[in-house]
Image 1 (spheres, helix red, strand yellow):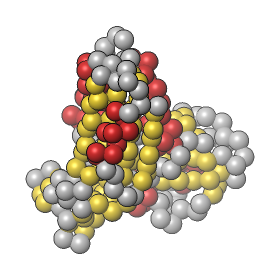
Image 2 (cartoon, helix red, strand yellow):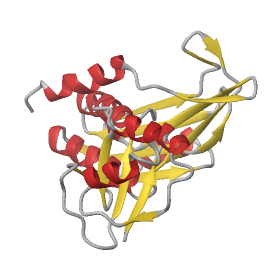
Image 3 (spheres, one colour):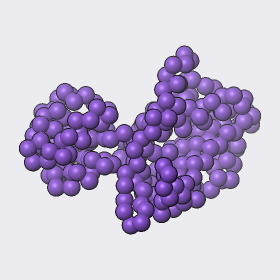
Length: 79
Length: 154
């Protein structure tokens, strides 16, 4: 299972998304969510949205090991 | 000595400055920056600000930024503090302090750390006004401030 995290405004769209999912890449996660959460997936498809795997910025095609933590990160606004 | 802290509670500027000052007798310059919560965002006033972060990853990314600063400039020590949770206008939100032998290293490194923090550290602001909450959009001016360092050869 892959643990899912959504930050910033993505969290507002992801409130009903399960905490875990079975998938082999972040891109596949996005694909799997598209049927039930189209508004969220529209946001995830914005080019500025980054994905991290186990707290490291990753590509959407990165292969996921079981137990990985995948987070979806909108543009940051700290400081 | 490099210290990175993500915390809900406030920090004491004088104490942070003193710790940087006392690292070593080679310290000849300490530059500190403190960011405050404004009472407006864009052209509208706000009642409060909420800061979310990605625990663990934020600290790692800030450490990477500080490591890069240490590669670019001759630094003796640095401190980065970012508050999270609920904040009000006038509250302190972020602190960057840099100690070096000479002022130019401290000035430039402090600005570099802030510019990179604003565009790379996993922190997100949400404003509250009139009982409604809204996530803040990232600013092109912040991205440009960060990008200019990429163009400078070190």
